[in-house]
Each structure stands twice: as C-alpha cells, then as structure tokens.
Length: 215
Image 1 (cartoon, rainbow, N blue to C red):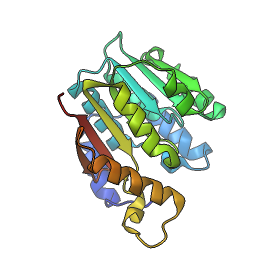
Image 2: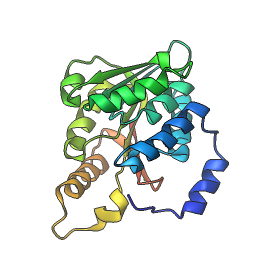
Image 3: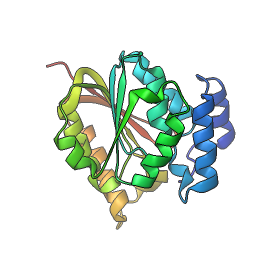
C-alpha cells in the first residue's frame, strides 16, 4: 500500500487525534515484526477515526468484516460502552488466534467475538441491527459485503469501507487488475445508491463513510 498522504502529515494528524492504546500499539508493532503484509493493519490515525465514529453514532453493536491481527476490532471496542460488543469475521484461523492473544491483554477484549470462516456465510446467519459496520476484507466480495451491510445496519448507524482508493489504482481505467476492478465497482455502486448518503475520504488508503437515508 502506497502512502497517499505524506507520512509526516499522517503522523502529525495522528498526534492531534485520540491516542492509541498500549495494547493497540503492541498489536501494530508485533504485526510489523511478524506478518507478511503488515501494512494491512489500520494505523493510529484510522484507529482514532474508528473510535470517533463509534462514539458519534453511540454504537453498542459493531460488526467488522476482516479481523487481520485485531487492531481495528480493539480500537472500536475501546469506544463502546461496557455492554457493547464487536463481532468480527476472519477467514484465517492463525490471524484470529493472533488477535485473541492480544485482546486478552485488554479490559476491552471481552467485548470482542470473532467468527472464523468465510464472511459471507457468517453474515448470512446474522441478525441486525448493528450501529457500526467496518468492511476491510477481500476486495472481490466488497459489493457483496456492502449489500449485506445495508441489510444489517441500524437506520442511525454508519458503514465504513476501507482501501477504497487502493493506493490510487482506482484511477486506472485501462485493464485494471481484479482487485482494482472490484473496488472501482464498489465505488460506483455506493456513489449511485439512492438509499445512502456517502463521502469517500482520503484517509490513509481511502475510507468510504456511508449513512443510510431516513426512510
């Protein structure tokens, strides 16, 4: 993932935002030491954004599609009330185990429940509403995840989708690779959906903020 915003600007923005917890920092540092694609972990600035969004919608139930090493799930859990829950979907059992090991070090870890397996299967069995849904998983299914998220989101909730600028590759209109094409498709679907109001932010690798319209 290429930096769309200069590193020093992102670091300044993070320093001016809600602080990263000690356990989140440990997850991030160990992810970079041990994982093959450590850039997939959301950093302090996006973690702060997730917390603020959870607080803004008074979230009690959050849903995450794509756990990876558990940073974003914990960041959201830290912003939820004591009775709040984060349900996170992860296809890789090793990643889920990594995440659980670190969640156990946080008093907020008890709020997090991980389901291991194909996310679409997990989502099909869920009942809403959720107040906050964060999508950060395989790009091929982004449109499918978005459509199911619309079924599960609370009327007052918000859907967040990560990596929607894809290091700028979304600008490639000449034979894009499958992941780029999937993200371009998702962006077209969201931006033309009359059921929602959305803004694509240039935060990190691009984050779509999507709010259902009042019925």
